[in-house]
Image (cartoon, rainbow, N blue to C red):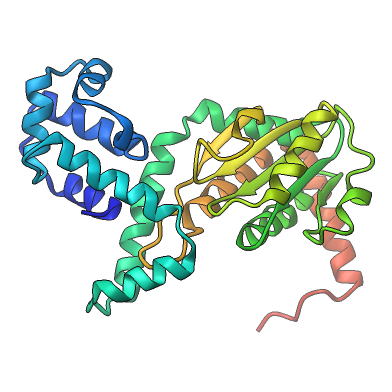
Length: 288
């Protein structure tokens, strides 16, 4: 049973008792850590008896909790593999389904649901306020595939407030770009497995300068996560061997939306000014 199968199985369960429903909610919200839980720890955290935990595991198709745990631990190891190893494993599996879009959408929905459960409203608004009202600059960073998400946030945030800077992911120019970081600045760092050393170094530099860090990641235990003032979890589990950007993009959309509401009239004035400049530069093609 893979991680995707576990979540799918939980979604198919019906006629759950109150205790079983509590366990299902706990499994959905903490399935990344379940591989390291025990019957006793699950019982303590959910207020459900140990016997009920064991019966619920059986309902998921496992004779023993140890079998369930080993399967989840294998999934953790799979997530840490390189795409090359993951693709080799995919080929060995002999998967025959060709519903590429359907499988991708189903996995995206699972990621979105988990992100919604992992990011309470108050946490999202705390991040949005920090990014909207930072008296200094808002820096944005991301490497490899995360760079595209960082770029998307940067473009949107430039419409909302001044002083938004995208850090070029070229290693040779980064020191110059970060030379003027101050405690008034804030960094939005986007990272997902496999995490890069460059992102870790960027975060370390901002923390050293006294700036706050908002971390958008698929792994709450990602490198440098402990250094971030705010951590936003956006699962990136993919139906194929590559990670998915769907949940992270939804979180970025939500951050931009919340920032716009917080900045209110200032956004309207800024948008009007930007639109006048775009007209002067004939930026967009004519409608129709």
